[in-house]
Length: 278
Ligand SMILES: C[S@@+](CC[C@H](N)C(=O)[O-])C[C@H]1O[C@@H](n2cnc3c(N)ncnc32)[C@H](O)[C@@H]1O
Image (tube, rainbow, N blue to C red; front, side):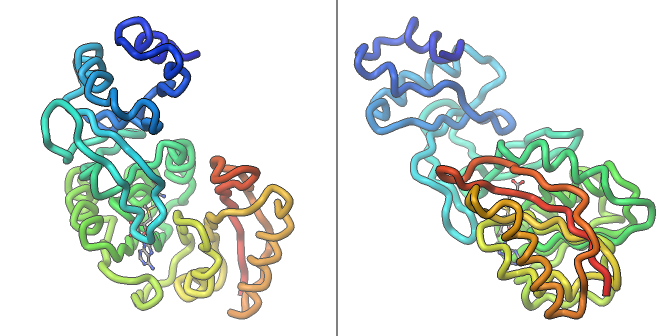
């Protein structure tokens, strides 16, 4: 049992039979805490939230998440419970600042390591195209921590796009990151890229054809998607080879394969760094 859960049990009056449903921890985004509460303990949300505010002085507001993030825009179902009623906060990660509205946009905790890893990969002078830029989850750290020349950041959700533009300014990367509002299946970019970021899932495979439209004659695609344990790693590699062939490319090698996080039972959000040549 986590220290947080032990604290809740010790300090709140939750019936013993419901203790097992209490959360082990919480997600913090900037000064906002987001609690994932299971149905049996949802009625104690106010008590739990007030306790979090008292216990952790840096926390200004507490929100509760219910349901799963499943829509295309990944809008979470998050409701205010205690503290300041302001869902906009600034989150610091890997030396970058991300302003966002936690009730409208997501900030996936499980992708933290991946965001840090990709940030350092681009080599001097590279052009990068981020096909699913969101609020700048990848584009901003790549701009700050790599020597990439230009990062084209495509985002189709106007709310996310507005925060993307704010975050570009907040991090002082206006000279490197070019935000483009629109659907990556329709957006045209004259300059081809050395590196394509596809930080979105599931069914990212449907977008691979468009990724090749953005790629130079040789380059890397950071392909995220969801696969069952039994499909790893043959199936994603086969998909990459097939999709490349349709566009006149060949898969030269994969330089990284990783299970980012669990998505469903025996099903994983994975990432593959794949190098292609025309
Ligand atoms: C939420 S982000 C993924 C999370 C991120 N990788 C992280 O580390 O937390 C995915 C973004 O892709 C955007 N998106 C989805 N389909 C798109 C499309 N066809 N063209 C452009 N953007 C798209 C969504 O609006 C969303 O903002």
